[in-house]
Length: 326
Image (cartoon, rainbow, N blue to C red; front, side, top):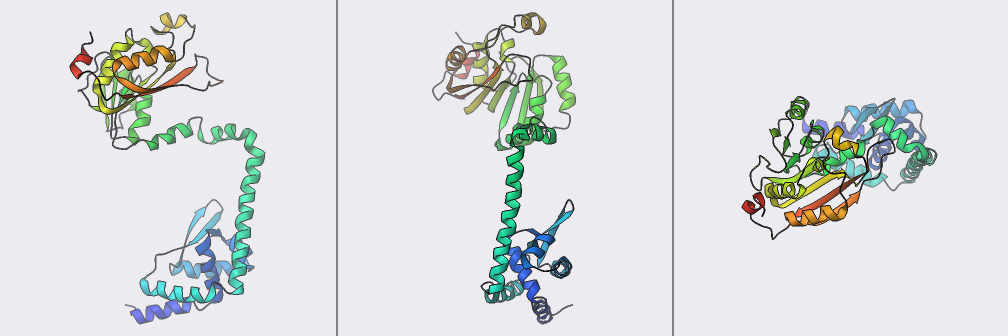
């Protein structure tokens, strides 16, 4: 076993080389490649690589491979004696002319790197949306934005259909209650959600939800309210199952003239405008209603959509009266 005295002596040997100390100073400032370090320190890449290997073998630095490059950075994973030794060496070196020149050249390297990024976006801005969609899909930002949800939330996907929204929500919240009136839709949702342990699938209608009073933190009605004969009654039952601090999100169609939807897909309502929906929500016990038109997708063939959010009002009727409105 190596004695502490011998270990610190080894550390002194590692820091006895000026090039290695310059590399450590450089990697305290930025994560850099071998080529960038060679440019900043004005040394051959072979020399830089040899000293980087020594520092990496002794855990002074860490690295990661990324494509054809390897990126190096300083590491704080050192014992107290080694850290103290480095602080002594660093204090003596960091204001020397060589160290200051290294720092200036590193700043220039980083500026060139940023300039390259800016140049890319200057030429690619017109095609960026199409490029990002090609690389990451059309819904990348929407899918990742769900991570903003509180992980303790209990959410109801009311009118869940085949479970697409439930599958997107489940990784980010505590539990999702997915409810639909169609056994066929629930069967498809069951297959899709088989790997989601925090999802409960149930058959039920919006007017008589199979949930206990005040059991949800949030509820979502995604393209389902237009199928309901009595939206106010449905919204009252949604209010019943929400906790006092609960929130509601409705996404549906703006008013349209596609009469064929009634026979083709069983639509009862040809969209909703802000005025009528806000009136229903207030009557059902919601407040802070916000109705926002959704930008039209140029590739979509159906009516334009809206999103509406609301909070449970503080002063609302009792749960029993919400179940049985007069």
